[in-house]
Length: 360
Image (tube, rainbow, N blue to C red; front, side, top):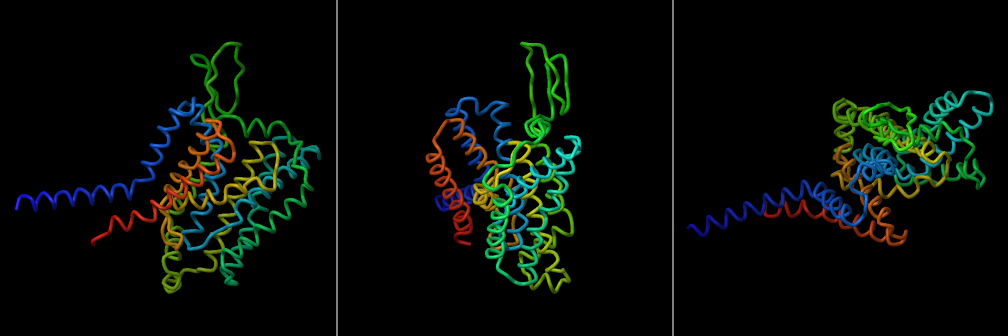
């Protein structure tokens, strides 16, 4: 009798342990890879190293959030990477044109960004119309938009990256939110002059601040508003959503517009960081953005997912990318390592639910 009770206790412990792993494996994975890189990559676990993770991760954070909204509805947006590239070129071209027309650099950048974000809504609106009203499969609709935005971008630059932006763009894109000269100065956004030999602490890159302001706003919308509830409802069961009175066509169109808005924002931030625009600026982030959403607990069948989970997935990929870069691995080694670890992570996410519910 005592032996039977001990077996039951062990079974209960094993089940709780599996449930814990199933729910928190991504957090564990992030902690483990951070510890590993802190030993292998010199300077990784420092203020500068951590800021590099977020600085270079802005694109995946934004594109991952874009995919979160679409994937929750049961769709997918393959165009985000090249919409990002398109926006980087359009913003650079507009800003240069406005500056050359005599407008101040500050106003040129402000108007250029606003106009780019407005233009950047067009690909998403077309995707939404194709998917929601004309019933074109999301894969086909967004893949077509990928090709269109890529082609238009190449036509705009004619093989030469957009350039000659005002230096203020570089100051914004590579500046920091807080500057501290210990014991003397604390400055926001404005880099203070310092005497030679003084320490200057640069804290939180500007582009990271802009990125997370956007993400937090839309995370609130998804979690706390009726719009977010309708998004989950559509992904869970479209027919039930229609019976509940949700305007599914309009809502899906808005979802793809939101996705395009985030992709365009990523393009603008790319332009500010690198002071140029490139057609393929976001081409390498498409797979990462989708995988980040899945790692974060979303279902490709729709109805499930959170922005917070996606950010966790994005952090896993950003830490991995940055750690390998600091370690000095070659491009090919990096691609192999990223591919293997991503496959491993996705497989864990797919198989743990079966382990957790086994025997129910």
